[in-house]
Length: 440
Image 1: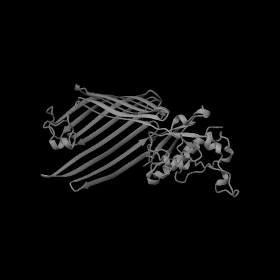
Image 2: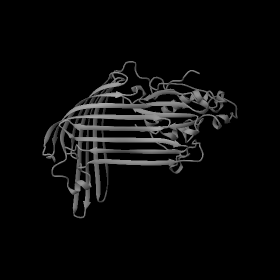
Image 3: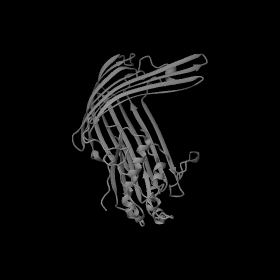
Image 4: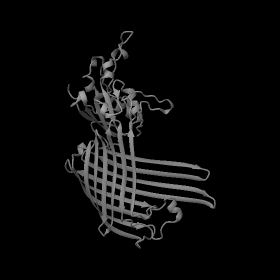
């Protein structure tokens, strides 16, 4: 059977699979039941979407003609779902179907994209149709497949993109948000705003943005009232150009102001080159990049620093490597960054971050995340130090030689291999599953 492909931006398809007599078509008074072989020994689907926010319950209620299983070892179809933001502010979903057991060797993969302005319901319905479409090649090989049919139509919510883009791939964003909470002896209020523009094509990236954050807190103490504030502002720009399937060059601009880090104002201009061990087109499954940056930074401080500076010009360089894997056995995201100032090589930092999720056996999984940083480059620390209130309330950056965090989780699940039931009474997810909601 020919491979089935779909492109949501060009022609979103909705797969309607059911016994024909059970649909709106005219049929006998007692429609035939769903063939037992399809649910009892047919498609057993394991959804691997640890890196994606998806409404699992909705998928299970829409696609009822497969058995959803809790563990990949019980499945004969393993679906790995990953996502990446698109240049227009939408989401590009990568669906990788891996045939197991009786479907060994029947693998498929395609990409489906949603526009930037879509509701959560539109996204989950489009995703459900794409999952069902990818499962069609397995369904036709099942006994009783003649009882099923496929109806394809253009989704009204997802019109095809125009042949000529009047915006030439440019996307503009602006936003403002606020948050407040409080009680009798405490209140907090924060506000943030952002403004940005970007143009992203398959080879090049141009992106600029402005953002600001303001935080106010009030504490009622036994000896009076304590008011605190923190402010931060950032402007950034990136121009990256793809040179080959493995190489990219780029220019970066960053400007910052922060009361927490004693920055009255700083601006950094840097150039860099990045090498990807694998092709960039494989990024949804695997990516291992090495990036080198060389930059110059001009800094003005709010207060005199520990080193007697109120302003200075710095030269720096950095090497960053990042490994990302999304495979049937789990996912890995490991990044290491080392940097130093060329003015003084003793002022340096080295950091490691990792997030790992592994399937260790039948029903047994492990999640590990953490980071560690060796810090020797805190040039902006104020000379007078932080007050007791600033230390306790984390209003100022504190002097340190290192920082770290670690999180480890082990999970074991046993019992029924099926995960078909959806029951939301009293907030229950049903079938031992997890509900993760898509939000735009």
